[in-house]
Image (cartoon, rainbow, N blue to C red; front, top):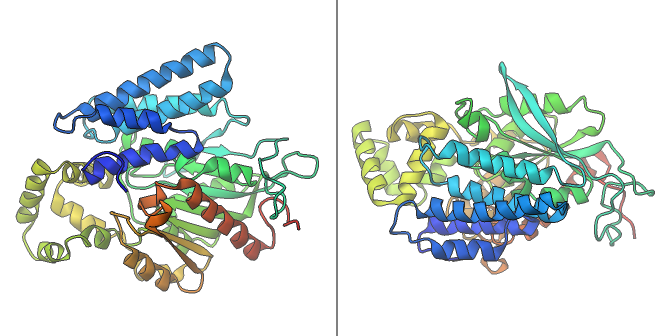
Length: 431
């Protein structure tokens, strides 16, 4: 699928920004007119034009808020958040514009979320002497979701009087290599989850968002020690059903979430959205011969080739810049060795909860063959769903058809949690 740019990396990030229109985080027209203004031969235009759009939309939000138009303000704040996030995306980690752009993205999201019918609670999860930030979203009291009385029965998390009925099954959303937890509200379809009666937690761990930017916490492969403290914090809360904790791992979160599920039996269901069970093999799949050669040559050669690639390719430059930052390494050779630690081979078989593995036919980050391999290693608990090109959902994380992906995810979770605990997220199916 091509949106506007010849460059795969620029075009996918444009599609990613546009995808969030499904849940109020973008307008296709705003995305497309921004893309049309960007001259890719002129460095800096990506940041300048996305910032320009973000500033304009933020002005709409602030005017609406001042006038008391909460719904209009909320939508514009959410879109401004997404456009500031997109503007920041390709900046170098040490770019002086990055902190302020990130902060404005987060502030815009929080302003929008504060105008939801039931604003989220901000979380601070104790973690190794510090804390991890996040949000807890609960279904809106007294509100019935559109279509709640369909053939699957009441699925809006309310009782017969229309009042919210805890304890709620809880979805914990985990981002990936370059996401922030505010983005997960859109990418993981939080509005859809809330309408079905799920509580939702979005949080950031080491190598992501604020822990990376503000605390300098780089990524770690043993994410059971990251998810564990989150479940520790959520478990005692009376409004949450500790028997029905599900994980959704977005993109590289498709490694983090299954890794946690393999070691923590509190996870009742797991979604790899999309799968990312072996980071090195995914990265090497486009050039397996080159990857094999790199395994045998000195670090100096690897670093020299990487430096050349960064000079001629914006995609390579971003990947290495972000990779060194996220993983806390200094060289391409060290980066290559580090990502080999992020593999579920030999671990996936320990996952015993229902696990949904998603993949797209056109995913340019990780192949469908690796998804099949992962599902086979998980074994009987695994369900594999491959999205076809014709559906518009064939891209990474189904960015071309997010509503379809989220329908698949939450329909599957409804059934998986019923089979695990005997209770559906909202009420039992009607007929």
